[in-house]
Length: 109
Image (cartoon, rainbow, N blue to C red; front, side, top):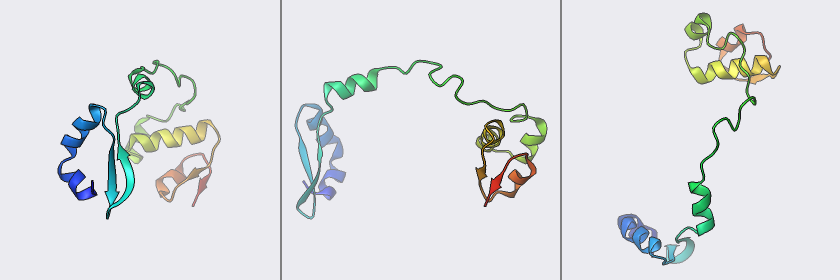
């Protein structure tokens, strides 16, 4: 089936794939992909729960990562984690965001 047909009738084709059918997708009548059911092995992997604490101890944040001053200057929590990680692990930070220059770390850019 061509891509336009697949887009307009996707839910029908997903039901057919769930029932075990493999559907070939074409771009201008040339096969490019297939829609097929997932194998039992893949389904089992998707059902498996990742243990809590799997990454415990892999990231350490410095004392200032959530300080009042840092929150005022750097409002984005992700940016604060980047600052803390760079400081704790003595890593340079690649950014053109000049607020980062006020922190004790190497800034590249």
